[in-house]
Length: 396
Ligand SMILES: Cc1cc2nc3c(=O)[nH]c(=O)nc-3n(C[C@H](O)[C@H](O)[C@H](O)COP(=O)(O)OP(=O)(O)OC[C@H]3O[C@@H](n4cnc5c(N)ncnc54)[C@H](O)[C@@H]3O)c2cc1C
Image (cartoon, rainbow, N blue to C red; front, side, top):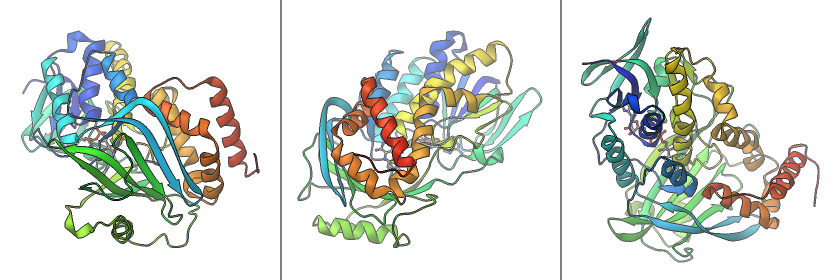
C-alpha cells in the first residue's frame, strides 16, 4: 500500500473536516490524504446532534454543505434550582442525526479526493524515523504524519502514552415521542435543576427517519474538584429514570444509548513527533459535552498548521498545543475549562442566578454558539463579572 502524506485515524467530524480543510489549503495533496475509519458508513454515533451554526459557517468557507434532514434551532431554554429563562436568536443552529451527517460529510470528502478506508480499525501506532505506521484490522498503513481524530477512546492517544485527563463524562440518551412540558420544536432545553448533578438533562427536537421525536439525555462530568452537592454518587441511570418519570415517560420503554466524553485540558500534551490530535481525541467542552462544532473548529486550526509544517518538513509538532491555545477553539475551550468549577462547584447558585438575571449573557451564549457577532461591550461586561465570580466577590 502506497504511503500517504497524511494518515488520519477516525472518520468523524474532526477527521473528515481536517482532510477537507487541508485539501483546501494544499490542493496538491489530493490523493495523498487517507482516512482510516473502523466502521462503515452510514454508521451510528451516539450523540444528540445539536450543531451550532458556527460549524456550518466554517465548512461553508470551503464550499462544503452537509445537507441532511435537520431541525432548525432558534432558541434555548434553561431551568435551574434558581428559576428559568429562555432566549431566542434566529437561525443559530440545527439538530441532525449523526448517522446521516457523518455519512454526508464522508461523501463530501470523497468527492474532493480524500481516500477513506472503511472497516479499518487501528490497533496500534508506531513512530518511525521517517514516518508513522499503524497496524489495523486491514493490515498496516504508513504515512509521513498522522492525525488522531478517533474520538473519546482514542487508540492514538493511548498508543502515544498521553494522559486521558480528568474531565471524563458519562452520558445516556434516548429518543422518544413528545412529552408534557416539552418546549416548541425550535428550542433546545437544558435542565440544571438538580444541584447534585455535575451536569444537566436535555430535551432536543430531532428527526428520526422523518419522524418528529425528542432526543433526551443526561450528561454528568467527573473531575470537578469542588462539587456543589452531597448526592453526587447517585447512579446516572437512576437520575435519568426519575426525571423521565416526571415527564410521564418510562426509561425501560426506550433503547438506551450510553457513552463517554472527554473534556479539554490545555496543560496536557496532545501531540508528539509526527502525530497530533484533533476533536474529542484532544478534548472538548467539559461543561456541556458539546463536541461537533469543536471537532470542526479543531480541523480548521489544524489544516493551515499541517500545511505549513509539511512544507518546511518540520514534523515534530512540538508547538501544536501552543497553536491550539492561540486559535479560536483553544481560547473557547480554555475559558470553559477554567469556569467548569464555577458552573458545577460551590459557586453554582451564584452563577445560575447571574445567568438567569442577565439576558445579555444568554444572548451572548446563543450568538457565540451560532457563530454570530457578540457586542464587545457585552463581552467586557461578562469578562468582568466572571472575574468577580472567580474571586468570590458579590456583585449586582
Ligand atoms: C450521548 C452523546 C450526546 C452528544 N450530544 C452532542 C450534541 O448534541 N452536540 C454536540 O456538539 N456534541 C455532542 N456530543 C459530543 C460529540 O458527539 C463528539 O464530541 C463529537 O462526535 C466528536 O467528534 P470527533 O470527530 O472528534 O469524534 P467522533 O465523532 O467520535 O469520531 C471518531 C471516529 O473515529 C472512529 N474510530 C474510533 N476508534 C477508531 C480506531 N481505533 N480505528 C479507526 N477508527 C476509529 C469512530 O468510528 C468515529 O467514526 C454528544 C456525545 C454523546 C456521547
